[in-house]
Every structure is written in structure tokens, then in C-alpha cells.
Length: 128
Image (cartoon, rainbow, N blue to C red; front, top):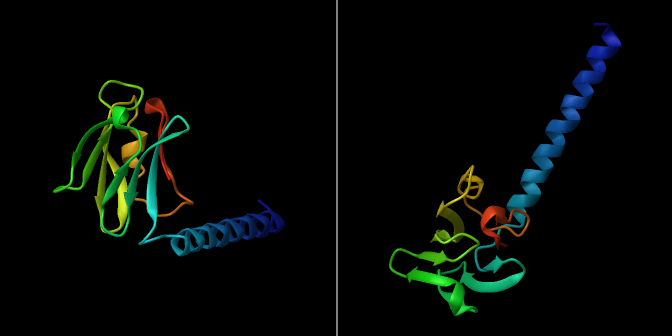
């Protein structure tokens, strides 16, 4: 490798690192503690969860399997019979249980930012 190649690689890595850090900062700045997490099935709203205290508003009763207000969990029906289990804690929401081939929605973790929605496409559920 020649010196110009090494310089180019260093510049590209530095630019990538700076872009990553800027994106993380913008995502953290967009985090909300008093917003609302909206749960969609396909493109229809089915549930709203207040991020301030975990209270909820049901929009489509046919898609709500169970709400455990004591543990702050919301079980909603997706495309499969089991559905998606959503947990609220500390002004954030996450998917804690669902059935899909790779369990990607569970691995997405906590979210309270509109810039990082939780998508569970095998179940047709999106949490914004």
C-alpha cells in the first residue's frame, strides 16, 4: 500500500466516525420523555402509550390481546397469532417478546425517539 492509499483510508474512517457520532447525538437530542409511542398494525393506529407515565389509549380493541398496567406491558396482535409484547419503562418502550424468524424487533432494544422506530415487519407492527 502506498502512502496516498493510507491517507485516503484514514480520511474515510475519520469521516465515518464523525458521521456516526453526529447521528448518535441527533438521535439522543430527539429523545422524548413526555411524548407518545404510537403502535401501528400495517398503517392503522392501534395503541398509544404515553412516555411520561406509561398510561395508554386503545384505538383498536380487536388488536389488543392484554394490557398489564402493573408491569407496564402491552400485548398487541400482529400478523401472527401470538402477537407482540411491548414493555414500557423509564420513558421508553421496547419489544420483549414476539414470534419471527430472527427476532429482530426484540434486539432493537429501547426507544423513545421518533428517529429510531421499532419495526417488527414479520408481525406488521411498527412503534413510533
